Length: 455
Image 1 (cartoon, rainbow, N blue to C red):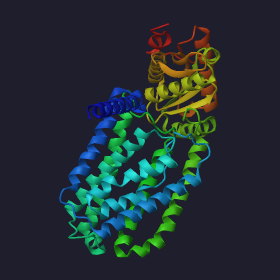
Image 2 (cartoon, rainbow, N blue to C red):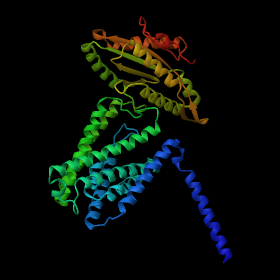
Image 3 (tube, helix red, strand yellow):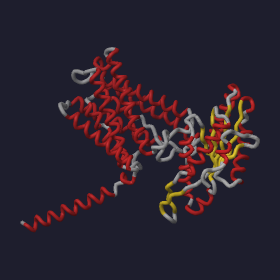
Image 4 (cartoon, one colour):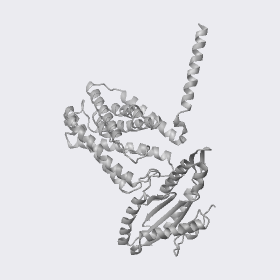
């Protein structure tokens, strides 16, 4: 008996050691500590709301049937989205699948528990075998937890404002203006909470950048808002049809899936406008947008500035660490340019290691300060990259910047680019890691911006 206890103890100890070793190798622990704490906090919060929602809940067959039906419809939407595909998008590029079409009705129709657990099978089970298979498991769990918390809160708000007295029927769901208002408030709560939780994750990952994943063109935000509005309206319509009669979903499902297909146009348009490597505007789209801005500037008489930024000795990075490390440096510099510019400024990649920035309504002094801010931001950057010879390395680079400014009817895009390019060559000839203004231009910030604080 004693020997069997000892063998059992050794087996349990070995199993515990194996479990501890597996946990220690989780990809989650390789993230910044702030981000790890945030992921764990949201996951724990979701677990808490699930436990809270269990108290006093009576399970009904009608609720379970509704839950299962919308899970299957969500699965169908995910498969349709995966088969569509979007050429030109990177694997880590966000891709809209309109899943809220099928998950938001559960939030509006069922008790909060169902909304809290709905995304576990969709994000952690189905995505692990399909569209989101390239996504780390911790990210799948976080997505399910964040959406679960948002759904729980929205369902609780809806039931507090419009008590159902049993399963929701069409009269208890939209039978009065007050109940329609409760529906809108619940949808708004779901959307805002989900955005807040995701923004929190982005802030923890990029605490120094208010917009780490900003779109390269102004139209992207308007298109995103339009898609969000269509998605929310479609979800409300599906919830109302379900309460009228579940068989009506047969008439609503094809149009909802067709709406998902229409997203392909917006994503293809974005892919055509965006440099795939840096997610900045590509040369063609940058010129198109800049020409429109020139016409506006001519009418208003406001100034406009153009910066051309070039990475110093970039060929040495490729030669020493390899082209994959060079690509990582390009992406780091692109992130630094986003962080150092305003949302309305247009940052583009002109090819190779050269970038171009359009500063709207910006005079020479402000442009010189912005250029020096960019130079210092990049000089202080440390980029982690995979080297074919040395493994993971931290690479630092500097940039040279040429600045050109014009105002009113004098604005010509080709002339601005030409003079900014000439200023860039002077910055390189003067020793690199410098800012130079176009010939004949001076500013109050010129002394501070011409000479780097660090060589």
